[in-house]
Length: 66
Length: 296
Image (cartoon, rainbow over all chains, first blue to last red; front, top):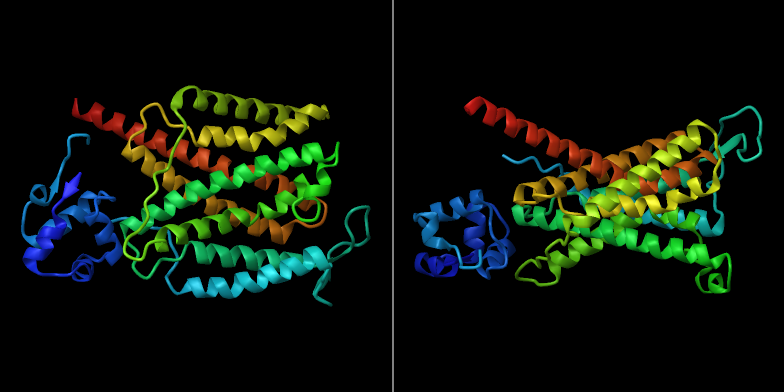
């Protein structure tokens, strides 16, 4: 699975630390998700989508080998 | 939504405060024969062959400090605890139990051979025999876990290191692990109940930790995300229950009898894990069947 978290953050102009603070996780967790090394739980994905006011599918996209 | 079964963040520091003096005291008890003067009770009328009437509690104190301390260090929340750190914690735990039993294999092989040739010269000193390993087994799993967990968290400043847990394929390992374990347990029980005293029945115990491990680290037939989650949680429960039992028996059992506890402790973590994991699987299958019966 890949995601456009970094792009979304740039559009909204918030840092990893800001986003982490809003959804109650650590900054390292946001970074690990952004580098596509960790697939967040559905709860966390929904929280992230809520921050950017977009559907989850706009931010998280399945890849072919998933 | 989710229960985490962790201690509050601040208790980690208390953990260091208990564990470090505990380890120093433990070292002095084990290698310098140190006993806190007067820290003792007369617990029996007379001395017997292996048990003296007066019990000094220095070694019990050391073990309690070490275990409580390390448990607090290992299972206190991080400052920023979230789902990923929780996941990394459970993965590290699963991995460290495996590594602990690799050490177990190594040292039981060494102790088997060291009786016969000069190998014991190489390994004497520190962990030389099977029995000394059982003492280390009390806290080594926790130490390996703490080192692994911090390594995964802090190796890279900006992100966490994620390592997948690898399991053995379902076939044939689950079958082998399960049946070898059950047969050994049956042999040990029969040997005890009927007082057979068959030597190789007793010796087969040395194999039990490994066969249980094979069972615990093989995939279920339909292993999926949900089953993996239950699996990792079950390991945490197993470690907790194991140490509660150990702390209680540390206070109640002394002298020669404690050797038995040391031996049993070699198998309790995988044994409790398997029991709890199978129970959870059974429960979730039952619920699924109930729901499908209701909806049809």
